[in-house]
Image 1: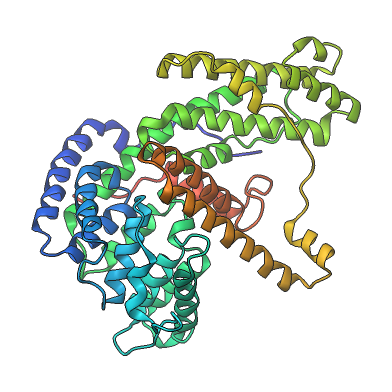
Image 2: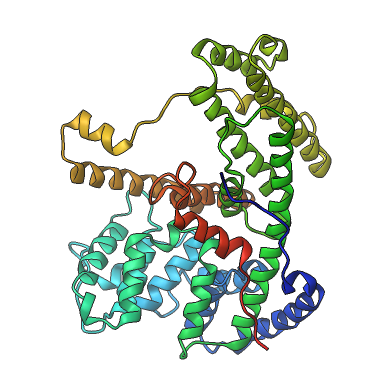
Amino acid sequence: MGFKCQAFSSPELRKEKKYKTRAQTLKEDVTCMFEEASDSLSKLELIDSLSKLGLSNSFEDEIKEVLDAIGLKDNSLSLQYDLYATSLCFRLLRHYGYDASQDMFLGFGEASTGKFLKSSNINVKGLLELFEASTLGREGETVLTEARLFSIGSLSDFGANSDHKLAKEVFQAMSLPLQRRVEWYNIKKHINAHEKDHTSTNTKLIELAKLNFNLVQASHQEDLKEVSRWWMSLLNKEKLSFSRDRMVESFLYAAGIASEPQHGSLRKWLSKVIKLILIIDDAYDVYGSLEEMECFTNAVERWNPQEVNELPEGIKVCFWTFQNTTEEMAAEIEQQKCWNSVLPYLQKTAELERGDAASSILCHMREANVAEDVAREHIRSLITKAWRNINGQCITSTPFLQEPFKYITNTARTAHFIYQHGDGFGDQDRETRDHVLSNFIEPLALFN
């Protein structure tokens, strides 16, 4: 059985009004930090902290003003000979959708070959930021490819020679860089890191981050309770006992895509859609016969309930739940967004073409007749190429499309998060449970 979502009670929920008032005061204090920042690098580091602490949505205007000013200076910022500052500048510009040029790094390499040069001025901090910046490269950007190879090669020389904190950061970045991480599921880690780093700690910034996390977590708890009630009502009323109980895991996926409190409807509908996919997947795998599921597929493609009348009760319930949920979703979208005729588009996306997906590594091993380590490296290269394509689409998109591309990118990040260490849906391991507890149930301790 999956996780049970009972009533979540915590002091944070009871004191929500007080917390919101305090958070507003802290936001005004943090806004002043932009004015107090003495130079461009200080402002960039503040933006980086806000992003990692999950606070960038509260300071969009201030962040845009800083990055617009940097963009007008052709990304130069007088940071050419500071690898850390240049890499941070480049990464933040691209992260926020600015078309920063890879030429920002030309001053660190040989003019003839473009290869990066080792220097006594380059330290682990700069190399780590260079590696993170290189992961936002697009297809064909050879300077960023060289930056990636140079930073990986140079960082591999440190290891035991670097202090514990930086060694851990290097390991985490090499395992999964920031660009590929689900931002919201890393907030607690970054808050803890800021608290331990006494050289950069700002109590007001950390307090705001903790308050914000707890407030967002409270909204997630309410969403999770609602979708859990929906699922439990289906289990109690309908013949769906053959399906895996993975409602919380479905919500974990949905919240990774859209964590902001204002997107509660999106989170809930995504959770239901993911759960419906799992129900149908289980019907194919363990419940219906081949002939029965072919009839089910035809019924979905034609959106015709008559075609399931003679099928087993569980398959009929699958169809009716699928149809009712899709129609409810369309009605809510039309009401909230004042759009017309949403249902045909949702019906089109519901057309099924199903088959069991074999392991990509195993497939390549068989097709190319290579060993597992070779196949793994090949798949990694395909993932890197896919991310370059994602980067290219996000950076070159118009401002109107920046928001949709953010959630498309989050979908890729969340898929990696769920499946990085195995099947996050199929295997309810300790890691998945820890993520659920940390992000949805356990609030952060606040300052007295």
